[in-house]
Length: 395
Image 1 (cartoon, helix red, strand yellow):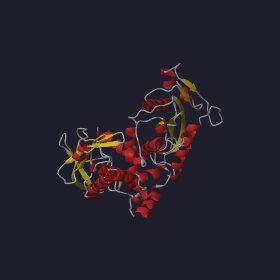
Image 2 (cartoon, rainbow, N blue to C red):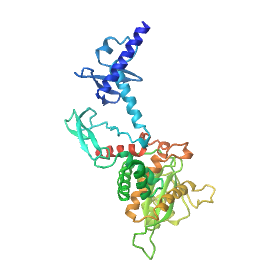
Image 3 (cartoon, rainbow, N blue to C red):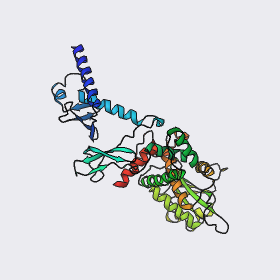
Protein backbone atom coordinates (compact mmCIF):
# COMPACT_ATOMS: atom_id res chain seq x y z
CA UNK A 1 0.00 0.00 0.00
CA UNK A 2 2.84 2.39 0.88
CA UNK A 3 4.52 1.72 -2.49
CA UNK A 4 1.25 2.38 -4.30
CA UNK A 5 0.70 5.71 -2.48
CA UNK A 6 4.26 6.81 -3.31
CA UNK A 7 3.76 5.99 -6.99
CA UNK A 8 0.47 7.91 -7.06
CA UNK A 9 2.16 10.94 -5.47
CA UNK A 10 5.02 10.86 -7.98
CA UNK A 11 2.59 10.57 -10.90
CA UNK A 12 0.65 13.60 -9.71
CA UNK A 13 3.86 15.59 -9.33
CA UNK A 14 4.91 14.75 -12.90
CA UNK A 15 1.49 15.78 -14.21
CA UNK A 16 1.77 19.02 -12.26
CA UNK A 17 5.07 19.74 -14.02
CA UNK A 18 3.31 19.07 -17.33
CA UNK A 19 0.66 21.72 -16.57
CA UNK A 20 3.32 24.38 -15.92
CA UNK A 21 5.41 23.26 -18.90
CA UNK A 22 2.45 24.00 -21.20
CA UNK A 23 2.60 27.65 -20.13
CA UNK A 24 -0.65 27.62 -18.13
CA UNK A 25 0.29 29.80 -15.17
CA UNK A 26 -1.91 29.78 -12.06
CA UNK A 27 -3.87 32.94 -11.50
CA UNK A 28 -4.31 34.60 -8.12
CA UNK A 29 -7.91 35.25 -7.04
CA UNK A 30 -7.36 36.41 -3.46
CA UNK A 31 -5.17 35.92 -0.41
CA UNK A 32 -4.29 32.22 -0.36
CA UNK A 33 -6.67 31.46 -3.26
CA UNK A 34 -5.54 30.51 -6.77
CA UNK A 35 -7.02 28.94 -9.88
CA UNK A 36 -5.15 26.34 -11.94
CA UNK A 37 -6.21 25.27 -15.43
CA UNK A 38 -7.09 21.61 -15.83
CA UNK A 39 -4.63 19.47 -17.77
CA UNK A 40 -7.20 19.01 -20.54
CA UNK A 41 -7.65 22.79 -20.79
CA UNK A 42 -11.41 22.61 -20.35
CA UNK A 43 -11.66 24.74 -17.20
CA UNK A 44 -10.11 25.83 -13.92
CA UNK A 45 -9.94 24.35 -10.44
CA UNK A 46 -9.80 26.54 -7.34
CA UNK A 47 -7.06 25.97 -4.76
CA UNK A 48 -7.27 27.33 -1.21
CA UNK A 49 -4.50 27.45 1.37
CA UNK A 50 -5.17 26.22 4.92
CA UNK A 51 -2.00 26.81 6.93
CA UNK A 52 0.62 24.86 4.96
CA UNK A 53 -1.91 22.57 3.28
CA UNK A 54 -3.68 23.24 -0.02
CA UNK A 55 -7.16 22.00 -0.93
CA UNK A 56 -8.44 21.64 -4.51
CA UNK A 57 -11.87 21.40 -6.10
CA UNK A 58 -10.77 18.79 -8.66
CA UNK A 59 -12.43 15.32 -8.54
CA UNK A 60 -9.09 13.68 -7.74
CA UNK A 61 -8.75 15.67 -4.49
CA UNK A 62 -12.43 15.57 -3.53
CA UNK A 63 -12.97 11.87 -4.15
CA UNK A 64 -9.54 10.54 -3.15
CA UNK A 65 -8.45 12.94 -0.43
CA UNK A 66 -7.61 10.00 1.85
CA UNK A 67 -4.55 9.29 -0.33
CA UNK A 68 -1.43 10.99 1.03
CA UNK A 69 0.06 13.72 -1.20
CA UNK A 70 -1.07 16.64 -3.33
CA UNK A 71 -3.16 16.42 -6.45
CA UNK A 72 -1.51 17.42 -9.73
CA UNK A 73 -3.00 20.94 -9.57
CA UNK A 74 -1.54 21.56 -6.10
CA UNK A 75 1.80 20.18 -7.32
CA UNK A 76 1.66 22.58 -10.28
CA UNK A 77 0.91 25.54 -7.98
CA UNK A 78 3.73 24.67 -5.57
CA UNK A 79 6.18 24.46 -8.47
CA UNK A 80 5.02 27.81 -9.88
CA UNK A 81 5.20 29.59 -6.49
CA UNK A 82 8.69 28.21 -5.89
CA UNK A 83 9.86 29.35 -9.33
CA UNK A 84 8.34 32.79 -8.80
CA UNK A 85 10.07 33.17 -5.44
CA UNK A 86 13.39 32.12 -6.98
CA UNK A 87 12.93 34.65 -9.80
CA UNK A 88 12.26 37.53 -7.41
CA UNK A 89 15.29 36.69 -5.27
CA UNK A 90 17.70 36.18 -8.18
CA UNK A 91 20.93 38.16 -8.01
CA UNK A 92 20.47 41.56 -9.61
CA UNK A 93 23.30 41.01 -12.09
CA UNK A 94 21.22 38.40 -13.96
CA UNK A 95 18.34 40.81 -14.40
CA UNK A 96 15.51 38.27 -14.60
CA UNK A 97 12.20 39.30 -16.12
CA UNK A 98 10.35 41.41 -13.58
CA UNK A 99 7.36 39.60 -12.09
CA UNK A 100 4.27 41.74 -11.70
CA UNK A 101 2.93 41.65 -8.15
CA UNK A 102 -0.43 43.23 -8.83
CA UNK A 103 -3.21 42.55 -6.34
CA UNK A 104 -6.16 44.76 -7.19
CA UNK A 105 -7.97 46.37 -10.11
CA UNK A 106 -6.91 49.96 -10.78
CA UNK A 107 -10.53 51.02 -11.27
CA UNK A 108 -12.72 49.12 -8.76
CA UNK A 109 -10.09 47.69 -6.37
CA UNK A 110 -11.24 44.12 -7.01
CA UNK A 111 -8.90 41.13 -6.72
CA UNK A 112 -10.83 39.09 -9.30
CA UNK A 113 -8.39 39.54 -12.21
CA UNK A 114 -7.55 37.41 -15.24
CA UNK A 115 -4.83 37.71 -17.87
CA UNK A 116 -6.10 39.19 -21.12
CA UNK A 117 -3.33 39.08 -23.70
CA UNK A 118 -0.31 41.35 -23.86
CA UNK A 119 0.55 44.95 -24.57
CA UNK A 120 3.85 45.93 -26.19
CA UNK A 121 5.69 48.61 -24.20
CA UNK A 122 9.21 50.03 -24.24
CA UNK A 123 10.21 47.34 -21.77
CA UNK A 124 8.80 44.59 -24.01
CA UNK A 125 5.57 42.65 -23.71
CA UNK A 126 3.59 43.14 -20.54
CA UNK A 127 0.55 41.08 -19.55
CA UNK A 128 -2.74 42.90 -19.89
CA UNK A 129 -5.32 42.20 -17.21
CA UNK A 130 -9.09 42.15 -17.17
CA UNK A 131 -11.19 42.69 -14.08
CA UNK A 132 -14.11 40.29 -13.93
CA UNK A 133 -15.94 42.65 -11.59
CA UNK A 134 -16.01 45.87 -13.62
CA UNK A 135 -14.90 44.51 -17.01
CA UNK A 136 -12.03 47.03 -17.39
CA UNK A 137 -8.80 45.98 -19.11
CA UNK A 138 -5.45 47.47 -18.19
CA UNK A 139 -1.73 46.96 -17.77
CA UNK A 140 -0.70 47.02 -14.12
CA UNK A 141 1.00 50.37 -13.48
CA UNK A 142 3.51 49.89 -10.69
CA UNK A 143 5.43 53.09 -11.22
CA UNK A 144 7.37 52.03 -14.33
CA UNK A 145 4.65 51.84 -16.99
CA UNK A 146 6.14 54.38 -19.44
CA UNK A 147 9.80 53.96 -18.60
CA UNK A 148 12.20 52.72 -21.25
CA UNK A 149 14.54 50.77 -18.96
CA UNK A 150 14.00 47.72 -16.80
CA UNK A 151 12.85 48.60 -13.24
CA UNK A 152 15.82 46.73 -11.80
CA UNK A 153 18.21 49.02 -13.71
CA UNK A 154 16.35 52.10 -12.46
CA UNK A 155 16.38 50.98 -8.84
CA UNK A 156 20.05 50.02 -9.12
CA UNK A 157 20.81 53.60 -10.23
CA UNK A 158 18.78 55.03 -7.32
CA UNK A 159 20.62 52.87 -4.82
CA UNK A 160 24.05 53.79 -6.21
CA UNK A 161 23.15 57.48 -6.22
CA UNK A 162 22.15 57.57 -2.56
CA UNK A 163 25.18 55.52 -1.60
CA UNK A 164 27.35 58.36 -2.88
CA UNK A 165 28.21 57.40 -6.48
CA UNK A 166 28.33 60.25 -9.00
CA UNK A 167 25.84 60.38 -11.87
CA UNK A 168 28.45 59.78 -14.56
CA UNK A 169 30.01 56.88 -12.68
CA UNK A 170 26.55 55.33 -12.42
CA UNK A 171 26.07 55.55 -16.19
CA UNK A 172 29.54 54.06 -16.74
CA UNK A 173 28.71 51.16 -14.41
CA UNK A 174 25.43 50.41 -16.20
CA UNK A 175 27.14 50.58 -19.61
CA UNK A 176 30.00 48.31 -18.51
CA UNK A 177 27.94 45.55 -16.87
CA UNK A 178 24.60 45.71 -18.70
CA UNK A 179 25.39 47.25 -22.09
CA UNK A 180 22.84 50.06 -21.55
CA UNK A 181 23.58 53.74 -21.93
CA UNK A 182 21.22 56.01 -20.00
CA UNK A 183 22.56 59.55 -19.75
CA UNK A 184 23.41 61.19 -16.46
CA UNK A 185 20.44 63.50 -17.00
CA UNK A 186 18.16 60.46 -17.28
CA UNK A 187 19.47 59.07 -14.00
CA UNK A 188 18.92 62.42 -12.28
CA UNK A 189 15.36 62.48 -13.67
CA UNK A 190 14.75 59.06 -12.12
CA UNK A 191 16.14 60.29 -8.79
CA UNK A 192 13.83 63.31 -8.71
CA UNK A 193 10.73 61.50 -9.97
CA UNK A 194 10.84 58.44 -7.73
CA UNK A 195 12.09 60.35 -4.68
CA UNK A 196 8.97 62.51 -4.75
CA UNK A 197 6.73 59.48 -5.38
CA UNK A 198 8.15 57.56 -2.41
CA UNK A 199 8.13 60.61 -0.13
CA UNK A 200 4.43 61.26 -0.83
CA UNK A 201 3.72 57.63 0.07
CA UNK A 202 5.90 57.75 3.21
CA UNK A 203 3.90 60.72 4.49
CA UNK A 204 0.79 58.52 4.61
CA UNK A 205 2.50 55.98 6.90
CA UNK A 206 2.44 56.17 10.68
CA UNK A 207 5.69 55.13 12.37
CA UNK A 208 5.70 54.12 16.03
CA UNK A 209 8.10 56.70 17.47
CA UNK A 210 9.66 56.91 20.91
CA UNK A 211 8.62 60.55 21.38
CA UNK A 212 12.22 61.71 21.88
CA UNK A 213 13.44 63.92 19.04
CA UNK A 214 16.98 64.99 18.19
CA UNK A 215 16.92 68.17 16.12
CA UNK A 216 19.76 69.96 14.42
CA UNK A 217 20.56 72.02 11.33
CA UNK A 218 23.41 71.83 8.82
CA UNK A 219 24.75 74.39 6.36
CA UNK A 220 24.72 73.52 2.67
CA UNK A 221 25.70 75.51 -0.40
CA UNK A 222 23.57 76.06 -3.53
CA UNK A 223 26.00 77.04 -6.25
CA UNK A 224 23.38 78.09 -8.84
CA UNK A 225 21.15 80.15 -6.56
CA UNK A 226 21.22 83.92 -6.45
CA UNK A 227 23.35 85.03 -3.50
CA UNK A 228 21.94 87.19 -0.72
CA UNK A 229 24.60 89.55 0.62
CA UNK A 230 27.14 87.38 -1.20
CA UNK A 231 25.95 84.21 0.55
CA UNK A 232 24.66 81.16 -1.36
CA UNK A 233 24.20 78.93 1.67
CA UNK A 234 20.97 77.31 2.86
CA UNK A 235 20.14 75.47 6.07
CA UNK A 236 18.86 71.90 6.23
CA UNK A 237 16.90 71.10 9.39
CA UNK A 238 16.61 67.45 10.48
CA UNK A 239 14.48 65.77 13.15
CA UNK A 240 15.45 62.23 14.20
CA UNK A 241 13.58 59.85 16.49
CA UNK A 242 16.00 58.87 19.23
CA UNK A 243 14.73 55.33 19.74
CA UNK A 244 14.21 53.98 16.23
CA UNK A 245 16.65 56.34 14.41
CA UNK A 246 13.75 57.15 12.08
CA UNK A 247 14.43 60.38 10.17
CA UNK A 248 11.15 62.18 10.83
CA UNK A 249 11.62 65.25 8.65
CA UNK A 250 14.12 67.24 6.61
CA UNK A 251 13.37 70.87 5.76
CA UNK A 252 15.44 73.33 3.69
CA UNK A 253 15.36 77.07 4.47
CA UNK A 254 17.38 80.09 3.47
CA UNK A 255 18.02 81.20 7.04
CA UNK A 256 17.75 79.76 10.53
CA UNK A 257 15.72 82.33 12.40
CA UNK A 258 12.52 81.98 14.43
CA UNK A 259 10.34 81.80 11.32
CA UNK A 260 12.48 79.05 9.82
CA UNK A 261 12.40 77.04 13.05
CA UNK A 262 8.61 77.33 13.15
CA UNK A 263 8.30 76.03 9.57
CA UNK A 264 10.57 73.13 10.43
CA UNK A 265 8.59 72.08 13.50
CA UNK A 266 5.32 72.27 11.58
CA UNK A 267 6.73 69.93 8.91
CA UNK A 268 8.14 67.54 11.54
CA UNK A 269 4.91 67.32 13.54
CA UNK A 270 2.89 66.78 10.38
CA UNK A 271 5.10 63.88 9.37
CA UNK A 272 5.30 62.34 12.85
CA UNK A 273 1.53 62.83 13.33
CA UNK A 274 2.09 63.59 17.00
CA UNK A 275 4.02 65.94 19.29
CA UNK A 276 7.33 64.95 20.88
CA UNK A 277 7.68 64.30 24.59
CA UNK A 278 11.34 65.26 24.80
CA UNK A 279 13.25 67.49 22.40
CA UNK A 280 17.06 67.69 22.21
CA UNK A 281 18.65 70.58 20.32
CA UNK A 282 21.74 72.73 20.34
CA UNK A 283 21.89 76.23 21.78
CA UNK A 284 20.42 78.00 18.73
CA UNK A 285 18.05 80.69 20.01
CA UNK A 286 15.52 79.95 17.25
CA UNK A 287 14.61 76.64 18.91
CA UNK A 288 13.26 78.44 21.96
CA UNK A 289 12.26 81.74 20.41
CA UNK A 290 8.96 83.54 20.57
CA UNK A 291 7.71 81.79 17.43
CA UNK A 292 8.71 78.28 18.52
CA UNK A 293 5.52 76.15 18.51
CA UNK A 294 7.06 73.76 21.02
CA UNK A 295 7.44 76.40 23.72
CA UNK A 296 4.06 78.07 23.07
CA UNK A 297 1.50 75.41 22.12
CA UNK A 298 2.87 72.70 24.41
CA UNK A 299 4.39 74.61 27.30
CA UNK A 300 4.77 72.32 30.29
CA UNK A 301 4.11 69.20 28.17
CA UNK A 302 7.42 68.88 26.32
CA UNK A 303 10.85 68.69 27.95
CA UNK A 304 13.11 70.83 25.77
CA UNK A 305 16.79 70.14 26.49
CA UNK A 306 19.14 72.59 24.78
CA UNK A 307 22.88 73.14 24.44
CA UNK A 308 23.56 69.48 23.63
CA UNK A 309 26.50 69.53 21.26
CA UNK A 310 29.07 66.91 20.32
CA UNK A 311 30.88 67.39 23.66
CA UNK A 312 27.72 67.23 25.75
CA UNK A 313 27.12 64.15 27.93
CA UNK A 314 23.52 63.71 26.71
CA UNK A 315 24.61 64.57 23.20
CA UNK A 316 22.99 65.08 19.85
CA UNK A 317 25.28 62.54 18.20
CA UNK A 318 22.64 60.58 16.34
CA UNK A 319 21.40 63.47 14.26
CA UNK A 320 24.96 64.74 13.82
CA UNK A 321 25.84 61.34 12.31
CA UNK A 322 23.12 61.82 9.68
CA UNK A 323 24.77 65.07 8.65
CA UNK A 324 28.02 63.20 8.01
CA UNK A 325 26.17 60.71 5.80
CA UNK A 326 24.55 63.55 3.87
CA UNK A 327 27.94 65.21 3.44
CA UNK A 328 29.16 62.09 1.63
CA UNK A 329 26.46 62.59 -1.01
CA UNK A 330 27.00 66.36 -1.20
CA UNK A 331 30.78 66.02 -1.58
CA UNK A 332 30.43 63.82 -4.69
CA UNK A 333 28.03 66.35 -6.23
CA UNK A 334 30.50 69.24 -5.66
CA UNK A 335 27.78 71.02 -3.66
CA UNK A 336 24.08 71.12 -4.51
CA UNK A 337 22.90 73.21 -7.42
CA UNK A 338 19.42 74.64 -6.77
CA UNK A 339 17.08 74.56 -3.79
CA UNK A 340 14.19 73.03 -5.75
CA UNK A 341 16.17 70.03 -6.95
CA UNK A 342 17.95 69.73 -3.59
CA UNK A 343 14.58 69.31 -1.83
CA UNK A 344 13.83 66.31 -4.07
CA UNK A 345 17.23 64.79 -3.38
CA UNK A 346 16.73 65.15 0.38
CA UNK A 347 13.31 63.48 0.09
CA UNK A 348 14.93 60.51 -1.59
CA UNK A 349 17.70 60.42 1.00
CA UNK A 350 15.09 60.24 3.76
CA UNK A 351 13.49 57.26 2.01
CA UNK A 352 16.91 55.64 1.60
CA UNK A 353 17.85 56.22 5.23
CA UNK A 354 14.53 55.04 6.68
CA UNK A 355 13.54 52.14 4.42
CA UNK A 356 16.61 50.89 2.52
CA UNK A 357 19.81 51.41 4.50
CA UNK A 358 20.36 48.85 7.31
CA UNK A 359 21.52 50.35 10.60
CA UNK A 360 24.29 48.68 12.61
CA UNK A 361 22.88 49.96 15.91
CA UNK A 362 19.54 48.33 15.04
CA UNK A 363 21.08 44.87 14.45
CA UNK A 364 20.97 45.26 10.69
CA UNK A 365 17.35 46.45 10.58
CA UNK A 366 16.19 49.68 8.97
CA UNK A 367 14.73 52.56 11.02
CA UNK A 368 11.34 51.85 9.39
CA UNK A 369 11.44 48.29 10.74
CA UNK A 370 12.44 49.58 14.19
CA UNK A 371 9.54 52.06 14.05
CA UNK A 372 7.12 49.24 13.07
CA UNK A 373 6.06 50.95 9.83
CA UNK A 374 3.30 48.67 8.42
CA UNK A 375 4.88 47.74 5.07
CA UNK A 376 6.76 44.68 3.86
CA UNK A 377 9.77 45.07 1.57
CA UNK A 378 11.69 42.32 -0.18
CA UNK A 379 15.32 42.10 -1.23
CA UNK A 380 15.05 45.02 -3.66
CA UNK A 381 13.57 47.56 -1.26
CA UNK A 382 13.60 50.38 -3.83
CA UNK A 383 11.51 48.30 -6.23
CA UNK A 384 8.93 47.36 -3.61
CA UNK A 385 8.74 50.94 -2.31
CA UNK A 386 8.03 52.35 -5.77
CA UNK A 387 5.43 49.65 -6.51
CA UNK A 388 3.58 50.28 -3.25
CA UNK A 389 3.79 54.05 -3.70
CA UNK A 390 2.37 53.78 -7.23
CA UNK A 391 -0.52 51.62 -6.02
CA UNK A 392 -1.29 54.04 -3.20
CA UNK A 393 -1.26 56.95 -5.67
CA UNK A 394 -3.89 55.26 -7.85
CA UNK A 395 -6.34 54.76 -5.01
